[in-house]
Image 1 (cartoon, rainbow, N blue to C red):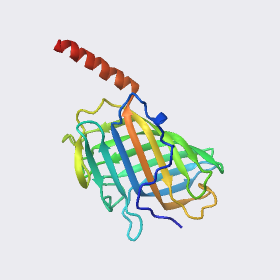
Image 2: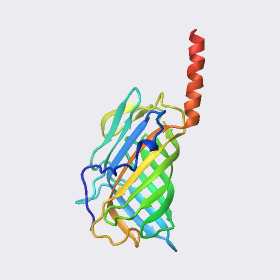
Image 3: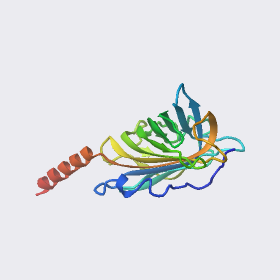
Image 4: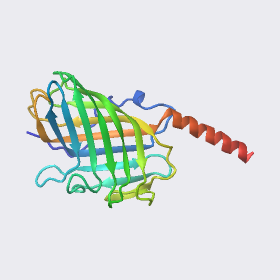
Length: 232
């Protein structure tokens, strides 16, 4: 039996200050609720987990936000029912290959992708790696790293838009790629062992933060120094 929640749950210190460099500002934050989580077992202690935005009658109604946290700030909000087919406007998808599944943990790697609305095709996505903590069967969660994150202004309009909020400009962000941290939280009732067998349409919450890579920060510093010298 699944439990549908209406507020984003945050797992204590899983995304601690250590997860984000003290020398780097958060560039983009995002969070999604009531994603449809599913798991397909593999051959031996492995399998594939997917969480995707959906609009299911009398069931899961995904919501979300993507915020630009650096000037000029803005927010793209995604209201319940924004993604009518699970693969269109505003789509969010997280797909992870799980290995070494035990009663207490599982390794995972894969990708995530966020798409804005309006069929413009603006996207944010990258590589995900981390570990599932399965010690609490009723509240399993994943904590991982985001790398090689690319934001792509495929539409050419320079704006990342939701169904609400102001949207935000993709211009002037730190250069690709970004890096960051992600949390994924599955909401279960009465599950004796997570990933012990297949499941589908389990309410799943996700949140993440993106920062510039160290290399990008260095380039920004060099560019700033050069600009300062030119002004002199």
